[in-house]
Image (cartoon, rainbow, N blue to C red; front, side, top):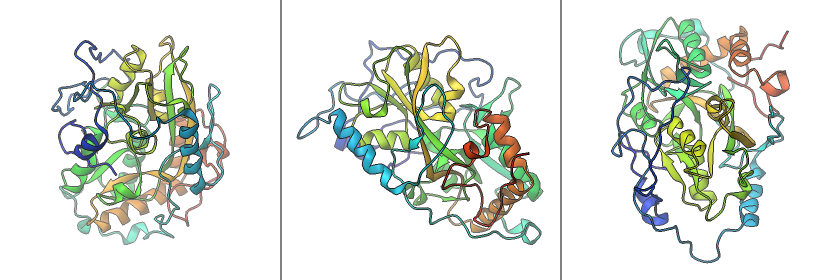
Length: 377
């Protein structure tokens, strides 16, 4: 389980003491890179202990593991064991990417609600909002197409536009503020934000910190590397491969605790991608939506492999003790699913999901168990 820090990018202490933490040597400058105007740097971005755009720097000593080194076959075995809790899936594929079940900590879905409270029964004055009538949302600025700031300086993306539509159903004004992912859950817990919006995978570990709404999307994990890289599959991540992750993410947890490797941790998606693009790292393990949003024609990088997650779906984070707000958001989510808004937004932001089967992989659907997703016309 990862322990998140509120306002810095230091490596999680207990992981540091047990596994060690790879640092980037001073001779290896990190380049923030330049990206198109779909995802500029946030004017509201928080600073970190290591400075903007820096990876964790703690030890240049290569990670040592007791016993035998983790071989490719062992990695494959870890992945195979991880699939046992997942049903069959059929998700979108591009560039030869596979759509096997996610190699991650999957749990049976025991959280999705059977139904929701009718919208007209929601009591707006009991939602525990920081400001009455306003939904204050912590989000990211650099992760298109899900969550980012557009060239006009507006927060947008699938997750945020869906939340705007949900706010409208509740008669709430939605206000966004930029933060870092590794800080977000603690900020929601401490009620600096009413809601966290960041394609957050709903792991059991995270549920110890915050509550979650019903799911609004399933997730993909993507392996990104240079087009001509020898690292083309998650099973090829092994000792000696420099793999980057964004600190505090499911990918960080997987590489550290399942694959028993020592990743290079970055504070945001822009910096992680810039470093795989420039060759500072061999591969980047990322949410596939964010990976697809970063890669541009001519970058010389590609998504080498995808793996889909249906059990640890994406949901909005809410303080654990604010059940009225969670219930209200669940009601609003069902409403935007039922009226076709969810499908419209998925088609707009994820055009590669061309069919109902690609939008709704086996074993998953958005919202409560009761709501029906209208068939695509």
